[in-house]
Length: 303
Image (cartoon, rainbow, N blue to C red):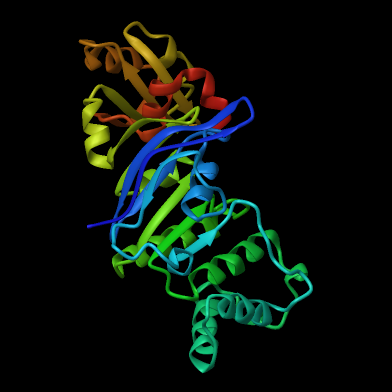
């Protein structure tokens, strides 16, 4: 069942067409990744969904007859953080819950559970300004979830988190989906989206350039990509014949091959120069798909 439908939405600021006919749907009980580099139009799209901006044209439909009070059904974590830094953690969370009409003992118990889940139990009495940026981010995420929203919208939720807390948030989002929650996840971190999303919507320069389930999107690009793990200096892999594009990071490479290329030739060239730990022909990653759709010159912008 569709919980949200965005149809032909346009938003213009002066001479800039920030969102240019964007259309996609969000299915109930799934994680939809709204992907694209910074400035692609993701945040503007989210602000129209949440009612902060009104679209110049197009329709945003909540998939039910009653379109009123939609803001109360949304849990929204904006990219720009907005916390009252002089309040302590529990006071702030109680305040955020009350804005959504939630108060009383049940809310306090819910706050306690979330603080423990985010490993913030010892910080409950601390002022927000005393917390690290990562912990402030976790507090704001708790505030997003306290009123049990029907749709959770997260704009770059892992921004400012260290690797350990990135995993914590990633596992939390998976748990929320398994509980039947619906999540719209906006991010430029393709690798993270690939670990979590059921559906993806790729936006570039205000337009949707690719959408569908993750499996459908990856399968549509075929199995023409080599994934290689190795020991040694693999810089030469990108210069081999029939290699269209190579992303080489540390001791791994993702290599897009020319159509009809024989992967055996790549293996033959690597043997003797590298110690191969993995050599697999598979569908490309989301990052490779993104580069293929919008151009390799954007690689540094989404890294």
